[in-house]
Image (cartoon, rainbow, N blue to C red; front, side, top):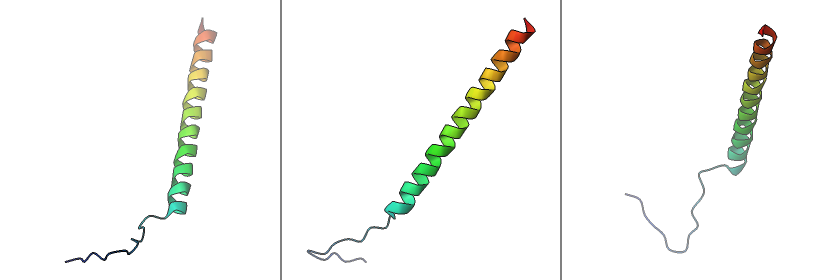
Length: 52
């Protein structure tokens, strides 16, 4: 079993830098996907208007 020690600091098992980089990459991917959907929607709207 594990032990607990009084007045000792616990080491973090999370790398803050790696987590920040992952969050930025996810945000950029979301922005890219959002822009692609918006562009696709605009193209479809233009095609619909040309058909009229």
